[in-house]
Length: 277
Image (spheres, rainbow, N blue to C red):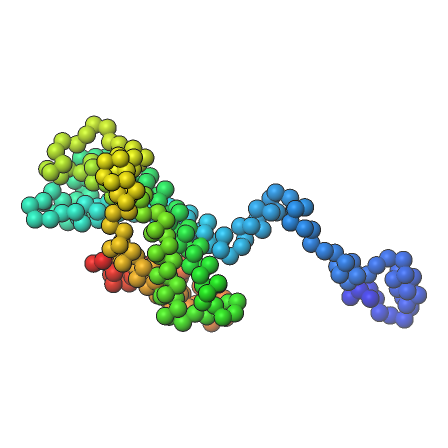
């Protein structure tokens, strides 16, 4: 008998007649079965596919990576220019502020964004593969049961494997992005800056044809993996720890601001610990 029906003796006959002619609400619910996947509408099927944990992490990681890299693109390029300097090269031996002003005066807005298109093309699959593979490895190999809490060592190991996976998949785009970032800089060794800079695919094709084929696109991957594996592992490990610390009692997840703080702290710790690599 439905919870919405009256239980007074005066209505007993009406209730009996209703029950014999129409199914109750509970019976209706019990007999309803979800439609098979091939009968789902396109919108429902897409939402169901996106809502899967690994797929959601894959897509969210890609979008987050593209947005974050675009925001910090001037500093990302400046970091590369600082890294390639050595004895006798002092074009960018300046403070961060003065170096950014120099970049703006010489190259304008395009100088700030130089190589960012390639970086976004790289970072979308990089972040997507990183977050997707982290969730995949965690659920498939490290969790003893669903929603199991991983130990710090398990998080470090799982994050390291995810970092190796992501950097292996996208490394050719990383090395091309680095070259594009340097080509237009005012280093004396590079001579006069070309009027028209090559694009991403042209640079990759030239490297493939003139520098030894496919191995040229993976030159330097060993030290990169040596740095990325502990970086990503530390990043995930510290993030999960700080996120749990910032989650207030009674909450399942922290607020967006506290998640942002957890990401900033974990990134700073991981980058500081692994930067020499």
